[in-house]
Length: 249
Image (cartoon, rainbow, N blue to C red):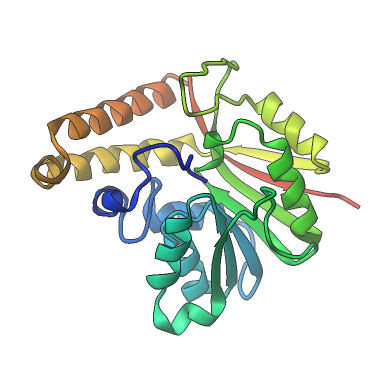
């Protein structure tokens, strides 16, 4: 769920997102990362909630390949409209995209979903507890909360940084406070190092297009961010993880 006030998340930047990440995508790794998120789990024909669906690409992929029904929730209204308008026509009956309601709650019934998943967006959320409590409410008994996110060896509070530096301990604590009592972390950094390397290659290959449409400063900023990401993962100062949370009755 991108921060709606962050100027990078606007309709004018859709070309940039798709150039960097792929059609209808907004996070690292493309379809390989989507498959990795759900590896070891049978997801065919399940009903899922996409928490922070971005441009809708993950939901489109899962709906197409695994015949899933996907509901999505986002913060920016334009993303809900974009994902709805750009959904493949033959999948439209399987896809529903919306925003949080006026109270900040997810506008779907309790005990409705086999899976709630979130790929690469929860590091934008500083106060995770109310969000995770909503996820717990939405899940059916024995449902799974599946997260791809970043964690750090040490917590650090920096109010000027739009991203949140969670540790394994802080992530697990808020999940348990939300009602999940079985939580499994998997270190996926080796995959994300490869995703970041491929991202940088693609970025450089599209240097002219990006600079012509968005300027040299944007290109250099994105390149620097992902070079730093590679260094931090390689030095184990930042970890890409998959988190599975569920309630063991």
